Amino acid sequence: MEMNYRNKIMLAPMVRVGTLPFRLLAAEYGADITYGEEIIDHKLLKCERHINDVLGTVDLIEKGTNSVVFRTCPEEKSRVVFQMGTSDAVRALNAAQMVCKDVAAVDINMGCPKSFSISGGMGAALLTKPELIHDILTTLKRNLDTHVTCKIRLLKSSQDTVELARRIEKTGVSALAVHGRKVADRPRDPAKWDEIADVVAALSIPVIANGDVFDYADFERIKVATGASSVMVARGALWNASIFSPKGKLPWEDVKREYVRKSILWDNDIKSTKHTLKEMIMHYSCLELSEGKGVIKSESYADLARLYGEDKYYEHVNKHRLFCGSR
Image 1 (cartoon, rainbow, N blue to C red):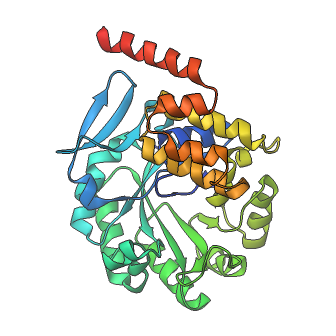
Image 2 (image 1 turned 90 degrees about the vertical axis):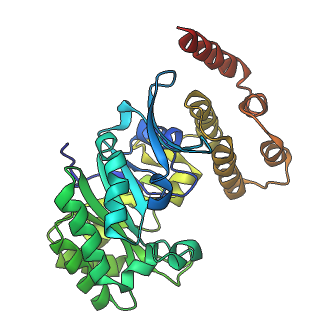
């Protein structure tokens, strides 16, 4: 399947956030390409692929626990990117082969600075292992028909980042996403758009710029500043997914309720939905107020539906599921 990485606005991968309902929400508002949350190869290899006839989805379900590790649907097949955490080429390939027919691309996470990733040799730990990066990416490129990409952070110097980016380009990847922060940087530290520009100038493949995009106008600002082919947004989309709309952001309350409705519709993991709602609330308000406390106390979608005045919608979805399940 062909995918164009130029002049696109994208939802960045976000752990526990980038599940099916949030990806569809972002796409509804205008995101061209949507990345799923990072999933570790070990986890995926414990899964079995199931067709969910009731929801109309493809589910990767963990054997033993029956928990849904990854859920997608035909509606997003042309734009969804499966992001994987890995530190081994063969294991990455085995995992990617389980999902590659259901997604538009497979992306390798080379930028996560969290201790869990780094201690496992994944994420930002790969940045200091160019030979392993080459092994992983070339193994995937040789054996998959799907697009292969990766996402990195900045290295200690711009020269080091450019050198690594050039090595990545030689593996034949379709595009490279660059988060304009170094491993030690915190989210509050300004993204270094000038260092992304250095990477863009050195490569011929599309470069996707990531960092400090909080309004629709920022998509053009970062493109102009960096020369990047496309732009990716994480926190700006988490706080209000309608950032992708050229008409401007919708009220946060409307976006939040639409997310709840989509989470109910697609039977998203309740813990994931609560996590995302809490992240939204903490940006605009406080978890100590009534809404935050209500989300924390909610144990089911019936609870969340009551909290957000979506009782009738919840009942309608459940009736439809019972009908589909009984056919």
